[in-house]
Length: 230
Ligand SMILES: Nc1ncnc2c1ncn2[C@@H]1O[C@H](COP(=O)(O)OP(=O)(O)OP(=O)(O)O)[C@@H](O)[C@H]1O
Image (cartoon, rainbow, N blue to C red; front, side, top):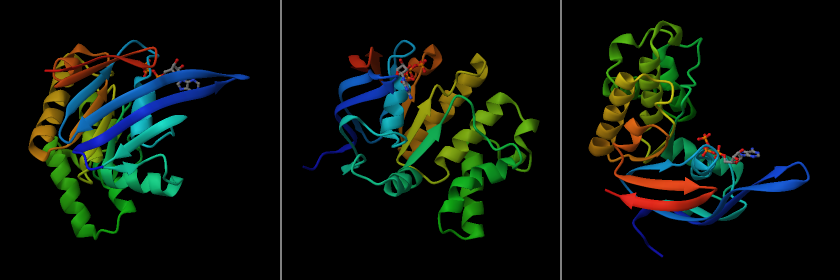
């Protein structure tokens, strides 16, 4: 069946083994996201936000149910196919920026492209374009230890968009930032959403994130409690 949903979550349950028994982190989740949404998962610690983002990003597999990305079932894929899906369609931003300390900013942003067959010149164009988007083209040769936390998160954003993904999943992207940097990050991400049409799904506790979202999905004990669009 044709739909215009970029992400479909159908009756998804996720259980984790805990000792001899199991813990249900997500139960019967039904959600759809359209291309270009700027949406977020909110809810108390342990409500299942990160677990759901990891399932959407094919970093983990559902216990029950299906997740479709652009109509393709993520669960039916092998590890290799999941890696390909992530590499081609999905970018990730985490609360700890996860930059590789021995490499320059340029090399950190270039990293996802090394898995693709592109020439050095093509890679350079894509890396510099991504760094320009986040306003850091002038510090491309610095190392992560020489830049601030706000700049590091902007590098992580550049790395997440360098492949021009359809979807970016951002898990607590402002958690380690002061409010000025948090607002700056949200401004950049909203611009990428509006100008490049990237679909964003956040997980957050931060009001600075929540107030900028177009759609807020509240999770509680692994269930959708509320789903509100502005
Ligand atoms: N690998 C795992 N094994 C066992 N339990 C897990 C595992 N991963 C997550 N959980 C449990 O699943 C529940 C949901 O965790 P999750 O990290 O998704 O919550 P969250 O809403 O993102 O919380 P936070 O806001 O603290 O990041 C928690 O109770 C957590 O302890």
